[in-house]
Image (cartoon, rainbow, N blue to C red; front, side, top):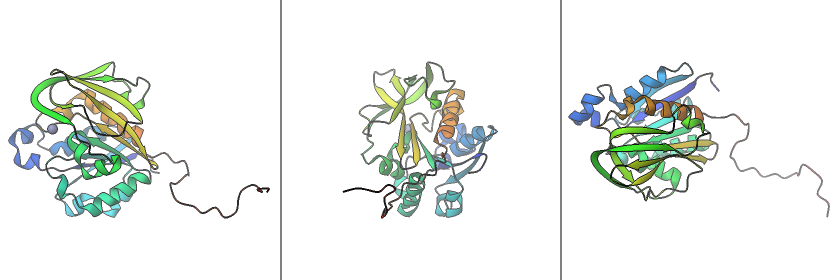
Length: 245
Ligand code: ZN
């Protein structure tokens, strides 16, 4: 393993091309902003990849040298090639971490990792959100305090159709009354998955220091851990101990 965490920040990158409100907040794209704050950390080395690049920017070389991937998609989930999704899925099962952000709840890769519809309720009226920490000892919540408050967000509400998280780190409250499991950890094979709800394209969510802290924490949590144990099928012909009749 490398001595820094190698992150590939993947973004659909279409709203930044076509949506004025998004362009103004993220002139470098959401991927540029996310890679920017990650690269300010001494133990993280982030690069970006987007949908419209060849192979969506996810060549075998890139995948093989990625410890943690972040994923943002919204309007073009269906344009992501199935063979690339298959490769990303295999990489996760073999130990790569993945952080699925906001509307990535409906991405091919997240739905495949969950095995459920990943449906939810939503409303876009710029209401307030509080993300309450419900796992105070969890590394993803390091330094966050009791809650993160976002003054203007899109609402996501329950029922969020995902498997019960292996570890639930945040529950969101919204001004309109809904709640949402907004920070969910899963283990899949040798890999780790973190779903983090904030990140709507027309609010400066990824510029919020508390949100940047959570994503940075999540990158460190999701980084591969070398146990020497691989999730593979092995036929054990000879038992380790003699088996008596
Ligand atoms: Zn959104």
